[in-house]
Image (cartoon, rainbow, N blue to C red; front, side):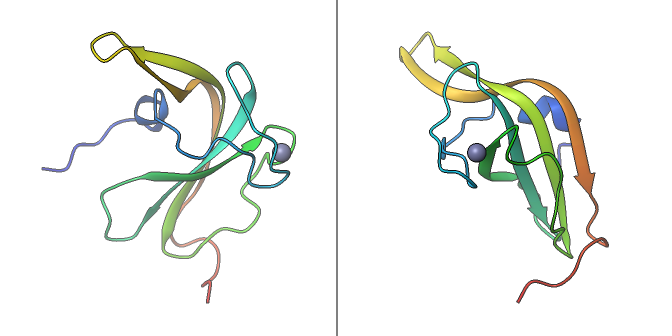
Length: 110
Ligand SMILES: [Zn+2]
């Protein structure tokens, strides 16, 4: 079953694997303002966040990919704790703005 949710909703609390800025390689931590790049390719149901940036490094989708829905979400990093496992993870919180690029925008990346 396909479940749809507003972008803010599924991005908030998203567990980030890569915590360095894709552009300047600064390691980002709790409280840092970030731009998170999320992508979903045509035919896929799943979103992924392959990279994040410092807010200053990336504020727009500069190179849209044809066939993919892309989002750049501005928020900040926060720590979420799972009370059951006592494990903390770095997640995306406080999303203020989302820039969106539709699949028909952009060009084919070879
Ligand atoms: Zn950066």
